[in-house]
Amino acid sequence: MKLYTKLAQITEEITNRSSETRSAYLAKIDVMVNKEPNRAHLSCGNQAHAYAAMGSEKPLLAKGRSPNLGIITAYNDMLSAHQPFAEFPDLIKQAAIKAGATAQVAGGVPAMCDGVTQGQPGMELSLFSRDVIALSTAVALSHDTFDAVAYLGVCDKIVPGLVMAAAAFGHLPGIFLPAGPMTSGLSNEEKAVTRQKYSKGEITREELLKSEMQAYHGPGTCTFYGTANSNQMLMEFMGLHLPGSSFVNPGSPLRKALTEEGTKRVLSLTSLGNEFTPVGHILNEKAFVNGIVGLMATGGSTNLVIHMIAMAKAAGIILTIEDFDRISAIVPLMARVYPNGLADVNHFHAAGGLSYIIGNLLEDGLLHDDVRTVNGNNLSSYTSEPILQDGDIIWKPGMNSSLNEKILTSTRKPFSKTGGLKYLKGNIGEGIMKISAVDPTHHLIEAPAMVFSDQEDVKKAFKENKIDSNAVIVVRNQGPKSNGMPELHSLTPMLSVLLGRGLQIALLTDGRMSGASGKVPSVIHTSPEVLDNGPIGKIRDGDIIRLDAISGSMDVLNDGFIDRPDIEYSAPQNEGLGRELFESFRNNVGSASTGASSII
Image 1: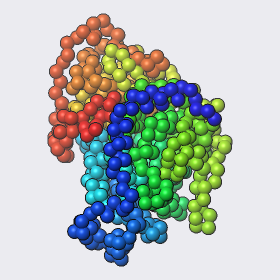
Image 2: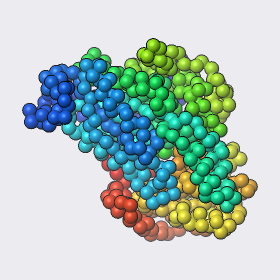
Image 3: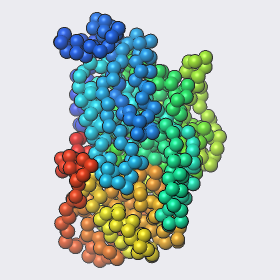
Image 4: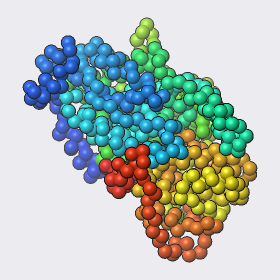
């Protein structure tokens, strides 16, 4: 199918806008390419240090011309999504030996669980951890002894940070090896209802904990379609996963086989072979457009708007929030996965999953097929699914029809004619709203402002029944410069209770929301933030605010609002739990609209 004209135009505009920076990036990485093993340039002393612990593989490293695979792991066993990675390095090393190569763990990176830090002070380090992950990866790969890289990461900031680093080392081939989602437990809808009951004081803390532990019960990613699972979708749409590998459960024979196959595949992509495919050439403008299309078609996480802008910048590509909005306007919503529906990612995968969506979008000209991937030179191969046959992986054609149209549908019969995100702009600034899970009756809210500078104050007001009428809850001083732009997802249960009481309630903030957030209309990532003298700082209690996701506007309606004098704000106290160590990040971070990074 011919590429849809509007998508081609958007891609061309991104390419033209990025021409200078992309050319400089490609020139930088291309000069780094070696036609012999990267370790060959090291001195004898350098090499002796690098191979000292490699046992029987020392001769192969010292004298051979076979590739050496670096492993970047985000393993820890506190984070359920990353616990399965404990076994991956040994599995990868064994697969590399079978392929006539070697593999070494180059280094580890931190992996923060937003579920653990949600509503806690540690959440203020969450976004900055993405940049720390990129920096940690750079340190690990700076030994310059690797010919390709296997990246082990799944969750919210981990994959974006790894992609930023992969772009910095774009002269090397790389592959992302996922761990997969945990099996289905207590449904996400039941969990949400229990949280609302607790917010209203109807159940005990013990009952709440029992519910939470039934929902989050084993190894693997959380089963809702938040940022972690949106990351997995993104890696497949951008060609950095093997086809069909995103949502295979941990510990299964297929998961193990996919890890082995991924190792073998990336080793075939080095400059020492005939299929040289450096990551920097995969991460081009078309790949990022494909990723945005996937985000919109599946109703993915708002966090990826920030992350993809930063990831693209690392590869010399300039994305804007408007690009996301324009692509959302032409891409239909094809999936209903919690919080956009009742199903979880396991149900989604069983109904046809990503291979079905990619095939459907390709047929309608809504994806670029002519892209380089870890699997070859087109995206069409991602319409296939892996199965085990006599212990080996083979790929079979994916579903050509949905097995459950309440979860997964076609471009011709979408849940919505447009994608899951909406860009808003007005006299308050600019921001985004995730509309895929918001009832259409709440796409336009006009109500008086209730202004807060801390999410704990919102919780206190709720508990004291001070929010008893229609309101736009303004939570400011939550931007990247203020306190690292924490997620405010812990407000969702109580705001959902207020919606359930029939009130018109919305959230407006310069902070973020979790990828799991949904039903409450929330304009987030508001930019400029308070510490950049953003107009959000001028809002007063009682101001009438209109948030219109239909027309894409966000305005204070009071006369003279924009002429009010700027108010000087100071950042919150950023001390304790290591937050003081990140002062240089807060002082140098960019705005949400430019990717909120302090390093690129």
